[in-house]
Amino acid sequence: MEVKVQTCAKHGVYTAQRFHWGWSACAQCRDERHRDECARQQRKRLAQQREAMILRLFGRAGIPRRFHGRTLGNFAVEQEGQERVLAVAADYVAHFPHRLREGTSLIFCGAAGTGKTHLATGIANAVMQQGYSAVFTSVMAAVRCVKETYSRYSERTEREVIEHFVNPDLLILDEVGVQFGSDTEKLILFEMINRRYEDIRPTLVISNLAKEALTEALGERAFDRLRENGGRLLVFDWESYRKRIKPDACDESAKGPPDAV
Image 1: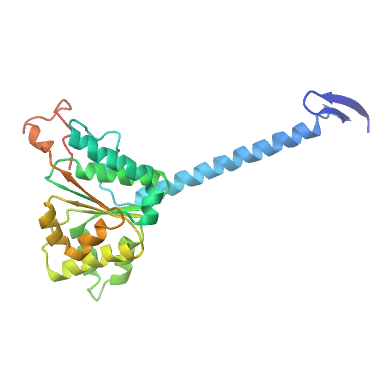
Image 2: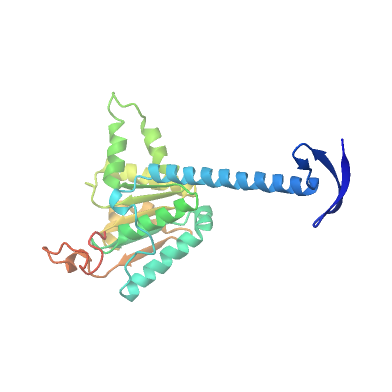
C-alpha cells in the first residue's frame, strides 16, 4: 500500500494511506469527528427521551384542557396582591427540588374567579417541564374514585387509588370544601394529605373558603400538616375576573382572562 507523510493543521505530521478514492485523512481528526457525532446523537436521544417523558407526565397529570396553557408568565397581574402570589409561585417553582425534599405545601384560598387554579396549574406545568410528576384533581373526583372501589365489581382497590394520589411529586387538590363533608370524605381526604405528609411530598390545596371554613373542611390535623415545613397560605382577596366581564362580552377585548378560576 502506498503511503506518504502528510501534515494536519491541528495534529501535525501523520502517515496517510492511498486508497482508490484518494489519500486518507488525519486519523485523530477522524476519531474526533466520530466522537463528536456520537456525542451529538446521544444528546439528541436524551432530548427525545426527555420530551417523551414530559409528554407522558402531562398526559397523566389530569389537568383540565382549559388550563393546559396556563403558565406563571400569562397570569394577570394588575395589583400588589397578584404580584405577591405570583412571586411566591415563581419562587416555589424555581426551588421545587428543595420544596420536594422538604415536602413544602401551598394553600390557595379566596373567592372564585381570582386566578387560583390558573396559578396552581401554572406551577404544575412548570414543575413537569423540569421532569417532576404532578396530578390535578378536585376533591370530589378523588373521593369518588375511592368510593368506586367499594363496589364488588371494582377492578382497583382503595389502596391503589390512594397510591395514585400519594405517589406524584406534586398533588393539586382543587375545590376543597365543595364536598359534602361526611366523615367518610374527611377520612379519605385526611388519608391522602397525611400519607403525602409522611412521605414528604408537597400538596397544593385550592379552595373558595376562608381560612376558618377551610380548616373545618380539611380538619385541623390535615390543615396543620399542610402548614408544616414552610407551607404557606395565600389569600386571593381581589375582585373576580369573571365579575368584571359583561354577560354579552364574548370578544378577547374583555378585561382580564375570562376563564380565571
